[in-house]
Length: 185
Image 1 (cartoon, rainbow, N blue to C red):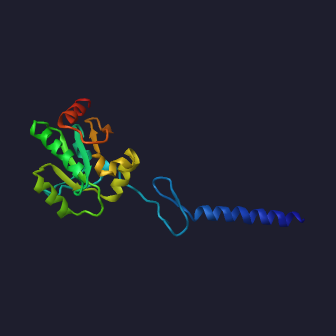
Image 2 (cartoon, rainbow, N blue to C red):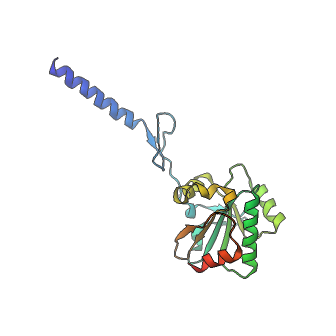
Image 3 (cartoon, rainbow, N blue to C red):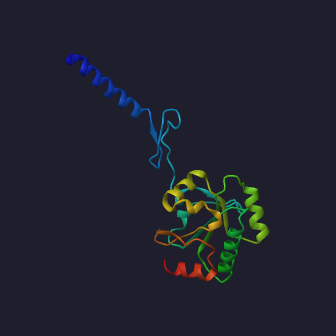
């Protein structure tokens, strides 16, 4: 075989491979999508830097706004009875005089502001309640795993004053257990 034909064939294969690679995109989690499925690199804002709105007051905030304070961040869905039990324990913690920041984030994309307001008011919950955007939820999943969006596991994150955060054990945590976790910060 002629060397020119071999070089030409190798060159075509090389260029074709490069073009195939360039026609794919990678999302923030490193997943590769074939051409046409996801042609944009997705940028996700870190969960603690996401702009949120407290549905009860209309106040805008970011979780990072509370640096220097302990934050109890609880993800929930209004349909979840386990979440309500966890929120009852957060209510007891607040009633005991706890001064940490309490934030409940709705991670169910099928729920809206009115449902969250009704849930909080019906149960007498008065701390911050927000709808968590999908991009921020992806950021939470990336850092803490899928458990963070599994409402019946009563996911709670403690954010310490130094900014370190940790996901607590699955299941409803009593007010006393939450207080103990806060003291570890």
